[in-house]
Length: 628
Image 1: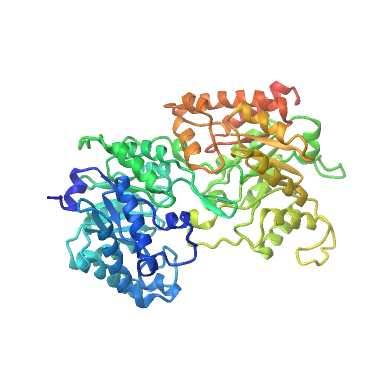
Image 2 (image 1 turned 60 degrees about the horizontal axis):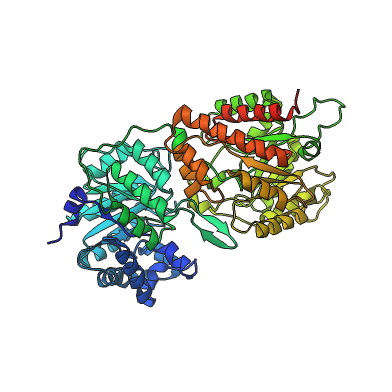
């Protein structure tokens, strides 16, 4: 007979299923609808998805009921269908899969993780209603997943345990801070869940395999508590109006074994995963034997696993300001790069309130005679310190030109113009206009993405300020003097189409271009040829790798970054100082090629290891003899 799910989690290695919502989106169904309603209006579609995951090797199948609670369904006027929707979700899953598969009732947070004004009574009532229906429908267990708040997860768990001994899996959605959103350590969170009766704990959503691996290494699980993991398929990219996830099935196969090494006993996929990802997981684990003596490795250095923002949605620098008085203003980045090799270096603003290392990095780069320091605008939709504040400090204290990125995501037209007027008042006149990653994929997924403007419109509107005209058309009494950059991703299949899009940004008024990091000498030459006709200068992106794991993460999980097989092989297995040394060496070799084709060099600092980009900045000057 098939084992009880609770026992199976302790003694077996199980493959879970993959995404439902994002997979339906990939199949062509629209966003903005209740996918749980498909249990009633398109049951054949849901049954087909379950069956595909089962045939791919999944033996734990989640019901299509994640958001089927009163609060979430009320947004669609479907709160009266809660019982039928949940019961049908269980029935369809049972009908779709074999008797050797476990059907678990999926329960998500009330309000889909958003901090709405939902009282404790409302929350409890919504959980009681949905959980009661799922238990009464005969599920093999429950999976409480994608919870950002520990207290909300504990509320749901207590409701289950108040009237049932059904196996319960509890999964948190966390970033790489090692804490829940309200600040509880993972060790404490899992301890409390175990005390309240959780049969297994783990992580899903928010992060890809790399981020969840880091969370596991920081968690320090209580003894005897099975671990479950359902990562996203990397970071989504927005291409031609469609969200696309980048992590390939073979990367998930490799990651699955790493998760098993760390004690995971149920491994599946979340957003962006497909039956192909699940098949890769199942195949990778087919000959893996769980070893109860295995323990999670020590926490690796932070730089090996931290998220590094994609560089296409990145930023640009500028030259040091001329010392006050009546002296002529310093030449712009565009002026400089037309005359000589010019280096801009990216430093991402901190995610906390400590700016010491950031300022040390800016000072070191100024000493190395970088022409500008560029700062992202909450890249990857992860909250960071205001880049306008840091830009003012960099300009004043480090004496180096700041270049700030302006994302379309966070501000409406009013906020964007206000922001630009503030930059003008501070004398910060070099900017990079970027779209910005959607808020739903960041550290505050309940936030709204604004997108009043596209990056094309942003460029045009900023250049309008240079004419002394506000976004509304009213006169501003004087003209701004912004030098506006645009982002370019050359790591694409059809480079000619990407260049055509870039031409439109130049038509919109872009003064210079900054690229995503490139890791292939041949591609550098190819980009130079493909963009040689452009009327504005291009800064080629080079980002030194910090470790083998950093290389694999960038290649598999970050949109717009592709590493060559040679680079991945050279970085494989390297960590710490050895990894950084090889990363710098590879970057120097890329710079040798880049210097032959481009005057503009854009160095991207990984994980605030500014000594790496300081070394590379000096390398450029040694090779070009352009600086004294």
